[in-house]
Length: 525
Image (cartoon, rainbow, N blue to C red; front, side, top):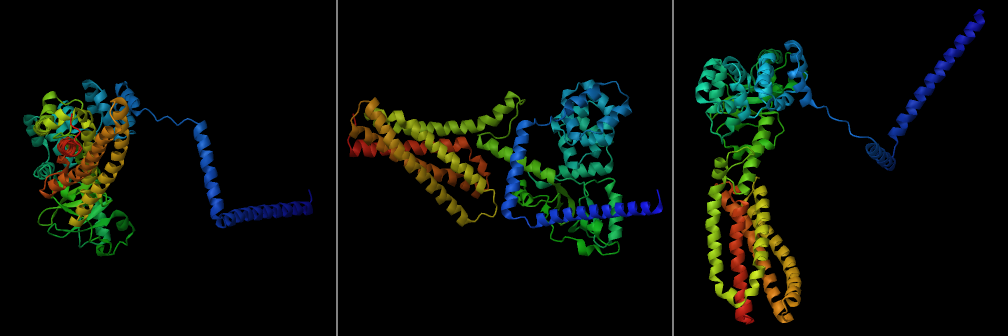
């Protein structure tokens, strides 16, 4: 091939490449311009089309099956692999997944697992284990190893587990723990269960306020070996008094020789260790921080409340409120002994029995009304049930509203009148329906005259409206009263409200019947 031909080919290839490149750039530019100039209507069409395509794909394809981690972990533990291989395999699984498996293993298999895994791995697993189960598992292992694991746990978790262990064995374990861990546990245990300090952990990074960024980074590295809660750093003065907080991201991007003062958040939220959980739970929920500092009465930093602890506290509070709404003194579970269940349920049942006797005696007081007009007895349960239902609804709404600690007296008055308006409107609608339906029922099925039938149904409708109005007020005022006297509003349980409203409904129903049907319309007999 001669030189001219080569040059021509080279020129042609170059031109072709330029055209191709230019074409590619033009295509990309056109696509970018098209994307920039897209209208709202076109974007909506694209979104709708993508959604339709996604729906079609979901119809045609089955969801991917999640791996059965439980079976995989059990197979590894029950296998005959070497300890190192087993440890490396188990390191690939989350600690929570391994914690879920522990109850499925035999004692010998768990002891095998204790020997294979490192202390740090075991302590992370125990962070996800229920306190009752954890105490059983610790009893299965060597005391020294048990002490080492508890020393590695967050201090609040360690306290919860130690409380479930036999006192004699607990004493031995505490003696085997290092001094720092013992001091941390003693600090947490010094708070009452209803104080927020009992839920804190001493796993946090603390630095002095007079450091440079470089010195603060060095201090972070030194402390991170023992405290892995590093997303937020807390700043204190030489006396340990809380000064503020630093976000780890801000510390990383700051210049090495800058002063910390520029990146310290001095308005960071905090709580005092002796504050009750109920008082500060709303404050904690309002912030999305990973950790919130806990101070003593001299403003010295004691520990932190983590977001995980906040979730657990909220869950515990909701469980307690739910139990009280059901008339229990505490939560129950499936494995709870009969004696414990009776102790939780019997106190409220005795109180409710006394109230029920009062309701029965009130019904007895209207014996003359019933003897003269026995038909009204058939509709007593309708009035009582609806009054109880309305009262329970108002109770639920009121307890939810009372979770807002900033509620003013005006807000509470507005709540009472709002619930009464709702009760009145519902009562009016249901009263009219009852008036029509019950009147027809009495006329056609009881062979009564239309006048008699609708006189009775009118009395029932009026009683229903009044009972629902009063029950709405009662369901709101009772929890407000408990809140005023510093008693948990959830104590105004569903059964209590229902029983009180039964009393209201009985008096309303039979009182209205006595006035309207017997004394005014003279329908007796």
